Length: 451
Ligand code: HSE
Image 1 (cartoon, rainbow, N blue to C red):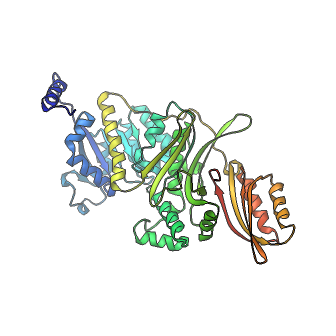
Image 2 (image 1 turned 180 degrees about the horizontal axis):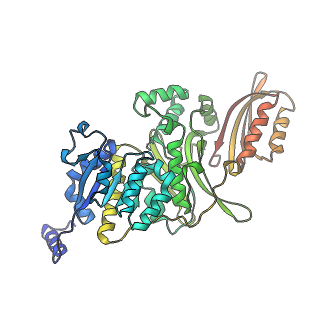
Image 3 (image 1 turned 90 degrees about the vertical axis):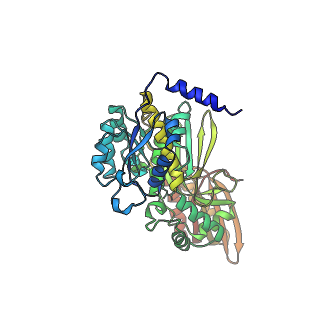
């Protein structure tokens, strides 16, 4: 039953009885593009709602933009191009939506050292400088929140650092870049080449004018570093992440994946690896992967993001949603803002960095992976034996071998069991040198069990 108006009024009277209205929480907004303008709009239009949720008015004290004259739609009295002055003013929270390393790093360090809490969506900065920012926050007792830095609207930072804080996470694997997922999904459905599909994605506005950070995997690698740091209580930076983009994925790879009931995705994979002697390390990587059509991530199409988490107690968890865009990313920013405002009003702070495990990051060459290798080979006795010998030489075990004859050549599709990535790469190199191998059609790592 809905509460009556009288009941609500009573509750309001009791809450305000005996104490002054709390002072507003003053917010500096740095950057006012697609996400920032949505944050500013909602904070202004729904001010009463945010005040009720936070426990005090959440007031925009200033908006820093490069060119105030270019923003006639924003409250002019709030606009400034002097970021340093705004950050150093009497604000409580700095929301950073500018991106890039500098000057964002300097602004946020200034804010944190002065005890102002920070909400940021800056994945590149966090993936490189999270320890420095976290330490500054610890010294002053401020909050550092960054839900919007990974996969836009999808709650991932909070589940990893709070909800699953009592569990042991073994794996975080996901599609964390919408641009590349859009391109790979389109290649899968049309059979078109990578360059044609990228051009179409740019024309439709799904890819940036300079798509390098997305298609070369840098954006996903920053997100993987953040996710791995949270999941494994270990400092992982972007430079620790093995990275391959989607530029080398061709129509032949997409077709080869279909032949074995799989689809190609660019995945961020963060895994806890346990060696036979019980020692643990973490593998953090971003690269194209063939996954079975039955896998939870296979059906995630278009520009959507999804992240799959495995933990000892919780088992399998799947997070899905919009990983970019104004409103979805603003949702994550505003959620952080309300939380940080509540923390300040309550006189406490949210979770601090948890990096006590300090696990080593495993080099890619030592990381166990599985490969799919598709070859055109001569169709005569002894060919399979020669190829099998190369796998044996590198101590790589085969999971499946399929052959189809075509005139004087045969098409051979091999899927391996797990082996160190360096052994698999050496195997592919040696196989390419064999006279009986006419063409190496497709080589790609696989994840998930064959159906
Ligand atoms: N450019 C990213 C993407 C969104 O395509 O998913 C911001 O991280």
